[in-house]
Image 1 (cartoon, one colour):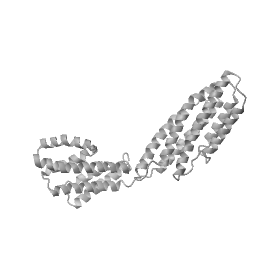
Image 2 (cartoon, one colour):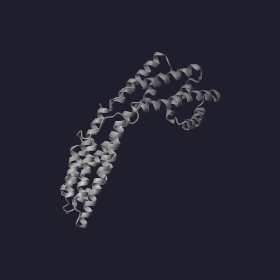
Image 3 (spheres, helix red, strand yellow):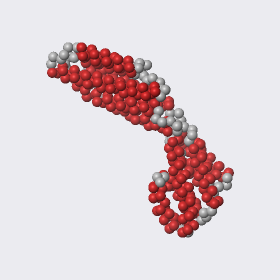
Image 4 (cartoon, one colour):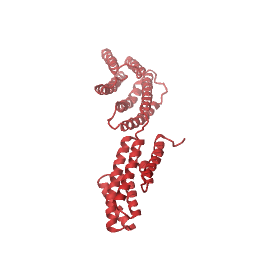
Length: 329
């Protein structure tokens, strides 16, 4: 059903449960407990706690100040207007303005009953506690996002493999038709995945940014290098100069494209790249200006690919220090 998401179901269950409990205790304005539940349920546990904190202190402050205000100046509409004018700057000063709506409902309850007694104070406090308690309870049930993250990671790795393969193929055949759409697609997947990874972190209150998030940051940094390489790959490919080093680098890219999903470590790829650099240095010097320029661009591509691999190497060192698993190359 459209709109019938996990959060919708939790909100519906929590709102009804809050009213039922408030009615059990014969509290006035029992439906206010449902409103609190609706306003407190957020996308993650962390956001829910932040929202609850702001709404609780704003409501408690409005309960105290509102009672004093009405008792001193009377229960008149103009008094309520002046209260809002004074109360909003206070909320902004202590940075809990997100609790304004719920705090106004509390003040309006006092205004309606025209009584600021201890019973009214406790009634409102109990409703707030019930509403926030139920919101915290139902929002403790969160979907497992790890499967989604792993699916996105596989898509990212597949796209990277395609990009590296197309680089290799384009170096070998400048007439190859490739529009580079995978670069745009993988950037979108990375951005989506980072949002999911952050959401997963915020659903675990004692966890900082996890390995999945660092992995996605690593892929984003690698993608920036790939973007820089696109133009140089095109320049080298379009040259009619027969430079055997071009084929050597194309072969390395082909190897790398096939091992994005393999169990090879980054160190193996770096060693192969180092061997490629050594072989290129041992070849005879370029004889023409065009050959020199192509060789220079190839060295630039080799340098960027080394940076590409070192980005991964640094990540896995960090992961291993924290007890994580070794990455795929």
